[in-house]
Image 1 (cartoon, helix red, strand yellow):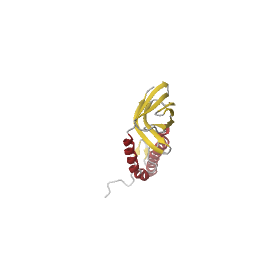
Image 2 (cartoon, rainbow, N blue to C red):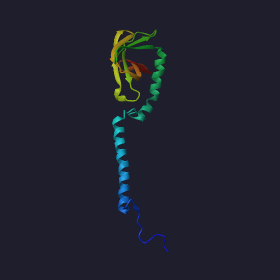
Image 3 (tube, helix red, strand yellow):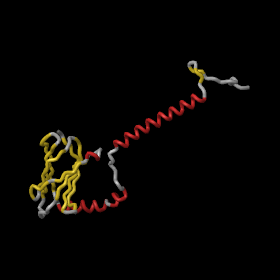
Length: 170
């Protein structure tokens, strides 16, 4: 004895629910989910700024060299004073002064403004010697939060490096 009638029909608002309709609804549901995921994936790929190591293994291996360079920098006892002053909307005067009792060394000074969230906005600025221990330049620096990286080199040798978070206001 069967509890279901010989022919089972489900009537929804005057329409019969058939196997074909159920298949169509399932395929439509999953097609919608896949389409939305593809759109979101497209946006994610377009807007990804790429803050990642190019080669994590090499970056890890260079850690000892970075520590040795930091110890050598500390042993020099250099103090570098950086001043950033707005001269116009979007333009800033950058002045570096190295204060120490060490020998006069001809150095090239570079500042990098690295955006914390979008590497496409990063910018490097080469400073001009004003005197043996002072460098200056006027550069375009938009308002916002930046990581200020200062590097001083003698030829290929990196002698000084600092990294500091700053906020630039208009």
